Length: 248
Image 1: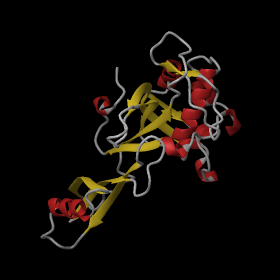
Image 2: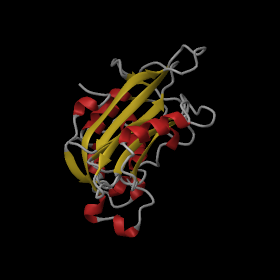
Image 3: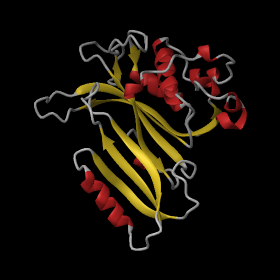
Image 4: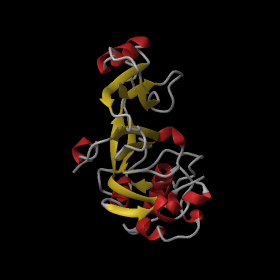
């Protein structure tokens, strides 16, 4: 039997930033034993370390299945902390100013509603994202290998709450949700940083689309810090927008 396994990990170390780091592991297991069923694998994983690891999905698949190459879409969230003490820079409720972050070197203020308007322009388009990639091999820096179809791209303000019962105040954050058939290396982090930069500068809503034709990657911003990046889900069926967190 060949089985597809989706495993959820909580962080094994101290909490980072707002909440514990979470991640997904997607893998395929192959066994010659016919008496082993998907439910047996799921139970064994969940009993190994209940407070640190949890099996979300275990299902039987064909031997041609590959957890990466068989995927139809990937869903990422980028969580960016906002300065709760700062005042909004527009009348929109989704507007806020950012928490200072030396690594990102971001502008001192931006409108989250503007970020949402700019990044929404990527939805439903097959585009080459080579200008938003970093550290890619020369053979993957041009042509179809750099093209991605963006199913969903939104930004919104929300609050995150700590698992610590003694910490009852939530942290205000901006969440950027991106779903595409594939992503290039560091593409999500560069998209987030560049969108924030363009929103702060008052750029037009087609700012990211205009950057697609740039020839130098310096036209885009350095990647946002890796700590805010979360791989939320990987799908092997057709994409359904109702699975997303940020919907109209």
